Image (tube, rainbow, N blue to C red; front, top):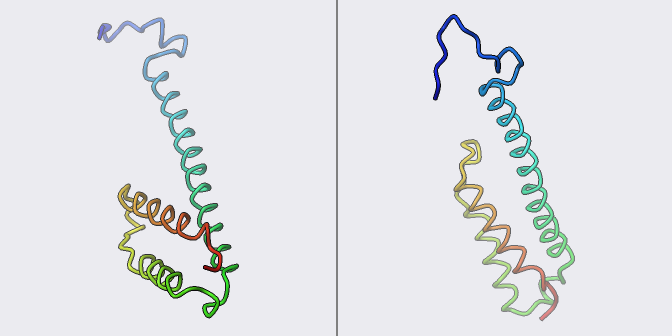
Length: 115
């Protein structure tokens, strides 16, 4: 890194193209990318969760389901009920757990029809 004497100004800063300005611009772009990515990621999870809820709502009455399917539904209920999360901390591992849980629920309820 080339240092300039304190009393001399770089021609870059006079034109508004200093390295710090470039970095600040890139950080702003990164922040926008982060927000866009988070919205898209969350929207995908929301869609899978909504599809799962719709499949559950459209499921046949319990007495019309096979015993095996009733056990699967109870297992899924316990899986959701026993989740261990601390959402207020905003941890990546909690996001991973939520992603995996929604994925498991979504795949388990996609073929939700009488058996």
